[in-house]
Length: 251
Image (cartoon, rainbow, N blue to C red; front, side, top):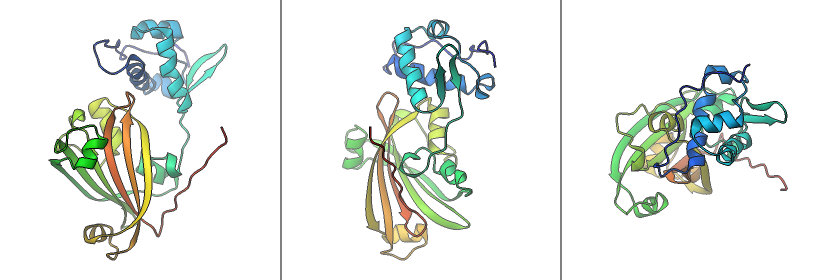
């Protein structure tokens, strides 16, 4: 694949934007590598040309490229250049960005059993996590997902008002795909906490379990590429068909 594929849809970066230039460059590269010319393993333009196209220094460009290399979206080869590669499939704790794709990798077709979006005043703990004043209006999204006709997971997401999402969005699609497409914001980092809990009456009804049934609770704060919070999520899993896996490596 030629490195001369089209770059016409990639805009120059805006220095007045509060988002750091390296984060803007990363978003621009994500847009670029989605083009058909690059998806099949195409080479990116050389660093000098790409930095000139984006209006940034080569060091800033390299920081953005390094992020995508570490993520497994780009591969740098000395004497050849930077090539787009297919991302590897992850599961377990690391696969937080798409429940639907994680399950698909296991051969499971996810069903949506319930979706409800409301506007409400952010509870104090949620407001603190999202760096908002207590009581600030946030969009609260409830979803129940499962398979084979059985609900398995309840997601409750509190979404930062900065995203500008409305109650009319199509929330049946993967949430972070929607945020990227509608808001031009990339979910980049997740801080996670896991605890055990039991189903209250509402969760028991949604997940079709008995009140008091054991559940796994997963709390997470999701940041964008500028390290700004975009979501506080509370996820409840039925324990019968879920196992938490965590792989660690000595640095």
